[in-house]
Amino acid sequence: MKPAMAYDVVIVGAGAAGMMCAIAAGRRGRRVLVLDHARAPGEKIRISGGGRCNFTNIDAGPKNYLSENPAFCISALKRYSPRDFLALVQRHGIAWHEKTLGQLFCDGSARQIVEMLLAEMRDAGAELRLGVEATAIERDADGFRLEVAGARLACRALVIASGGRSIPKMGASGFGYQLAERFGLRLVPTRPGLVPFTLDTASLERLAPLAGVALDCVASHGRTRFREAMLFTHRGLSGPAMLQISSYWREGEEIVVDMAPETDMFAALKGARSAHGRQSLATALATALPRRLAQAIGEAEAGTRNLADLSDAVLRRVGEAVNRWTLRPQGTEGYRTAEVTLGGVDTRDLDSRTLQALEVPGLYFIGEVVDVTGWLGGYNFQWAWASGWCAGQAC
Picture 1 (cartoon, rainbow, N blue to C red):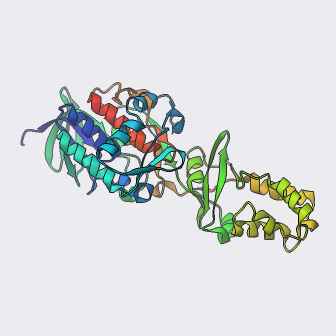
Picture 2: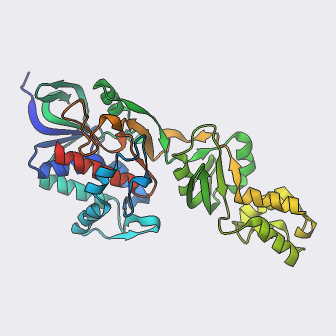
């Protein structure tokens, strides 16, 4: 057989974390090869943010991440901050804007971020091979050996940036988790995160007329609360508030939704009854809720009766249904539509500064494959940039 082609660093995964790692390592003079089984790099970047890429969140900090060790992400986020990535975006002349809650988006296409990363990789001398898979990975005294498209490769450092299980139609797989286990690293059980909820058949039938209705709400699970939009769908509940709370929810648990966070609905309905007794319940509710939702609640609770005909007990029940709608989702839509994968490579087995495996020198895990998962709103991209950059400084 031909002798193995030698690299300093081989990175498996041409997503956000993998490309950032390649840039950082290449700029340190390392000979870098990035591999991906997909036909195009950065596909999750391309589809993110409705095609405009929510590329970071200016307020990203450890409080915005879920992990068995919440402190693990602190080092990386401090060493490569949102402002560092924003400076890179600005150097490439990419126009951007800030939306709500510190979220930064491209004014134009998300492809600009992919093209920026590819340009940076070229400038750093990193090589990219697409449509190939790394197989027969073994460790030896000099580093690692692997096969790619029938060719043997050798590298001092191997970086796994293969992502999680979310959105399998885009090629997501359990490759990184399987490799971690092979080399003796522990795993935190994985599950879908930032994913819409599904409801039982009876609830879906009752809520079917509301499909497409969106509203501002506060979604709660225990002490965790998110104030964002909620969307009724033909499968259940979606929208940013539901996606956020889904990362904290476990099967069989309840969530609580305040559908009128600015309004004490019981007090408002009592006031409306005193001032406009002949008004319908639906009309009174529509001052704080979308019309279709107000109509559905009004008809279910009062039928054709006016406010004057409704007792305090009825108004209190309606107020509770609006301000503290308590429900138990049947489940979620799963990895098919999940934006991220919770869990992954256990941070107890990684160095928080370099992302290197503590017991396997030269082996690194970065990005989504690690048990660090951000909120919706640019936080997961920031973890990808930061973890990739930190590994690139060390490998």
